[in-house]
Image (tube, rainbow, N blue to C red):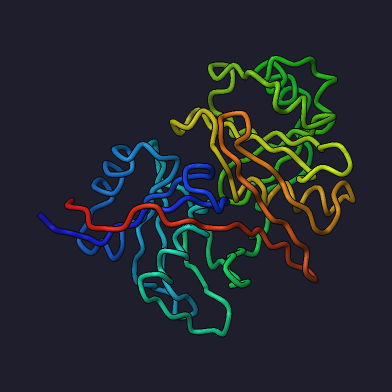
Amino acid sequence: MPRFRFSQVDVFTTLPMRGNALAVVHDPTGLTDAQMQDFARWTNLSETTFLLPPTDEAADYRLRIFTPGGELPFAGHPTLGSCHAWLAAGGRPRGEGQVVQQCGAGLVRIRQDGARLAFAAPPLKRSGPGDAELTARIARSLRLPVDALLRVEWVVNGPQWIAVLLKDAASVLALRPDFVAMQGLDVGVVGPHPAGSECQFEVRAFVPELGVPEDPVTGSLNAGIAQWLIGEGLAPPRYVAAQGTAIGRAGRVHVEQRGDDIWIGGDVTPVIAGHVDL
């Protein structure tokens, strides 16, 4: 049975077990798609990734990302966690201070900013407001009246995120969704914290169709939300979002606009290192 190098890291946190766990298999040469999916199902984490040699000359490595229920073209916490694992295993980027990841969504730039990594938010593949029918369905799934949803916006950057703005962080934390009513939707919810708080926004992510009713901390969703809120002047060009609070995590997502780019940053904490037999 082939043996592969294995890492497990916690992303968007400096404290083990307070962010979003990620399993990383290094150089899984010979594994089939079915074997990768089986292992991702077995880890039962929100995502498991596989680090492969790039097929694009501009990339430093290629990444495949699996949830328990299927493969994703892009996801944020796997991007940061896998890059950290690749660097820790001796990976050397072609460019100074920047790593280029190849994935299903294309090339993603990752900035080394001291100990913290940040990825450039990929362009939105779909944006704009959700229609009245979709808004009503999301309201039912969140067990809220329609008028509690201040804005409903598509922020698709791989995952099919539809983002909802509520009046405040307390309303976000109070949600008890109906996951049956939510089937087929990837719903992100955001609300502002009071002025002077440690974090400026509270975020929650619900993905029941992929076997992840609530994702602890979600880079792709935060990337889409940041592009939307900053683009419309609803958020400052630099802020910190909290995520995972409702499920006992303490994720922190560092958002910063630099020129035309919005960077999504987070700390990565190693937890497990070894080998896996597949």
